[in-house]
Image 1: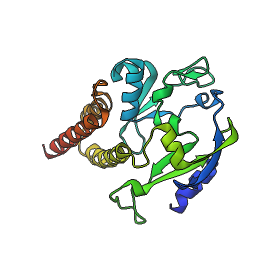
Image 2 (image 1 turned 180 degrees about the vertical axis):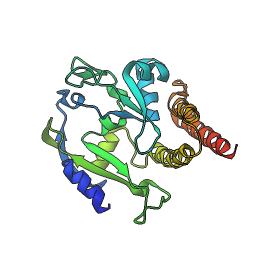
Image 3 (image 1 turned 60 degrees about the vertical axis):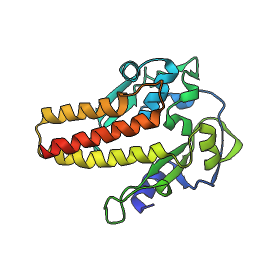
Image 4 (image 1 turned 180 degrees about the horizontal axis):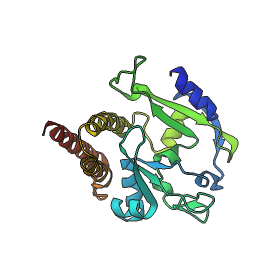
Length: 236
């Protein structure tokens, strides 16, 4: 991990932790981690899982509970759960219980563990990424207690998230590749064209799913189709 990233993590009160590293945390289901939250971001798998759990289409889920915007740096569509009220409560919290507990978003399921990867080398060049590049941080949760001890690997298993998370790696690659292409396109195309391309990215990558079918094959097909579309647009 580079020094800049270490400093950012430290400033946020977190610390790097390995897959076999231990941390203490016991959830007491108080609901505190679901309030004062403006950072619950959904990836395509989250949208699919939550939609299926609630029995609604991905499009309806996003319209009812989320907002969508372009990442300031990545330019890629970001789906954020829109908090409610002055306490910034997650709209999926009801009677202090998560309405989608069995299929909660990855960022919520992993709490208080965070997951990230570095796609660039020391010179800033984009490198090929794999499961070995995934890193974890532990942040003091400010809720629950220290009655239980866990390893990161055990916690992932408890969350139903595989250590070798094939989707996570594929999604990060899509973000990186799309971000690079979008930045180039923004210098070439007019804003209204980029708006159409951005909307296509959102629809294809986040919404174009049948929740009655397995997720990953659909995601792979959607991602490939969108990448092909981008390359075609650039050539025209």
